[in-house]
Image (cartoon, rainbow, N blue to C red):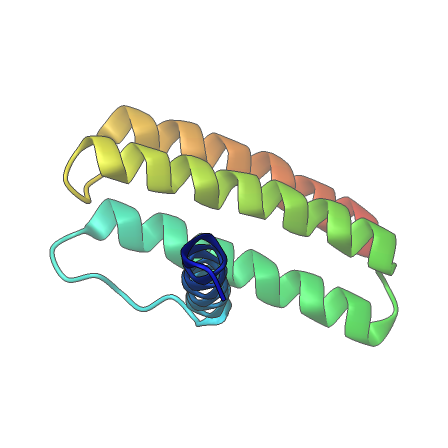
Length: 116
């Protein structure tokens, strides 16, 4: 193998490890973060909504398509939360929390309507 091929293989291996570790981190349940009550509130609401979606699919009151849409909305909220946290050393401001809660309220309403 020449040097270029070795470098390319190494880059692919590092990329695969990075992607798999990122996916595993997202799959893990979110734990409370000491000293970050706003972050904990948002994370707990996202976990609760995920449980509601899973229960809706399990008991047949929600289709897979509806669940996927709601999970996409929750993923968007989680992405926005991560961006906001990065701006403030792992914290959320009151305004950021308010905006995220507003989005969670809207998605919660969608979940409720779909299940009833």
